[in-house]
Amino acid sequence: MKRRVLTTLAIIGLVTAPLPALAGEASPSMLADACAACHGTDGKSPGAIPSIQGKKAGYIEQQLKAFKTDQQQGTVMNRIAKGYTDQEIAAIAKHLGSK
Picture: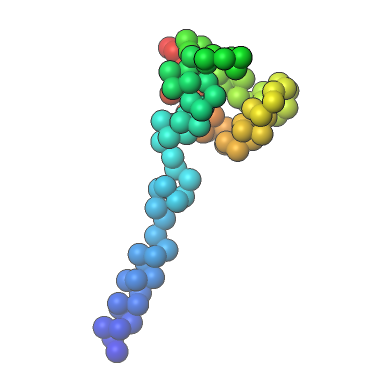
């Protein structure tokens, strides 16, 4: 009986333990992967979408926050930016931006 209780408690602990990927702790690289679909893998857009290659991290962060708060208008960027926390936006900007 005691063994069964301990086993059950151990299983509950494993099942409820937070996993970084499930808890929303994505790496900056993983967060920035979504940008590549439109802005290109190297940040150099092949078409009408503005390139982010060579932009300063502070500028990227400023623009993403402006999209998030609807101070900057875009076609889809407002909706995309709203999906990120300010901390995630800062991480994306740092990852993508030049020094």
